[in-house]
Amino acid sequence: MKLIILDHYSQASEWAAKYIRNRIIQFNPGPDKYFTLGLPTGSTPIGCYKKLIEYCKNGDLSFRYVKTFNMDEYVGLPRDHPESYHSFMWNNFFKHIDILPENTHILDGNAPDLQAECDAFEAKIKAAGGIELFVGGIGPDGHIAFNEPGSSLVSRTRVKTLAMDTILANARFFDGDLTKVPTMALTVGVGTLMDAREVRAHGLPRPSLGGWTCLSVINYTGTTDNTY
Image (cartoon, rainbow, N blue to C red; front, side, top):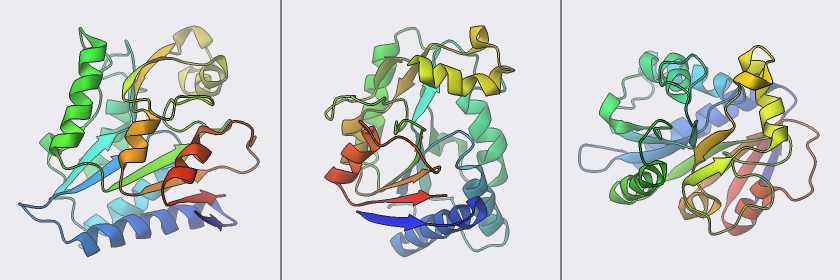
């Protein structure tokens, strides 16, 4: 484990973006060797995504041979809803870079069989050769993706009922109206994260340390937390 503490959000965002850029460039992806990248949503990664977009537009980085797998998606929220993670990723990242749409993978929270959707997502990750680098955001209680404190270390992509703390935290994206916040989501599991060859987690200051799910991931594989 390596802990990096930076003073400002902008510094942490740039550090994370540079790290991702350098990992992709060093990997030297091509048509027969894709770089597989796990990605988060939420407010934390927006600054990082903006820097990656800048690198791409400047010709310093290409996502042509990158496959992405997002951590989670709400259940029951239409794909074109402004707060769906499909919309978030398209508006904040994918439409601004040269990634091919067929190389982006986000769970379908409206699938007729949600568990089958989760199983298919795991199969897609395996077919892609596993995740080379999983980037995650750490919630105030230490959750990563929608794996709340106490989640099983061997959990796989699955359907989750959201904790009230998570619903309360996400209400700001739904005009503060708790009745509009989805109560269920699809999420990669802790075991799914642990399978990645590398995990990088980024968090905000002063979260509670008790029962952190992210600490379980950190204790299992080499990761970095950027705290800002």
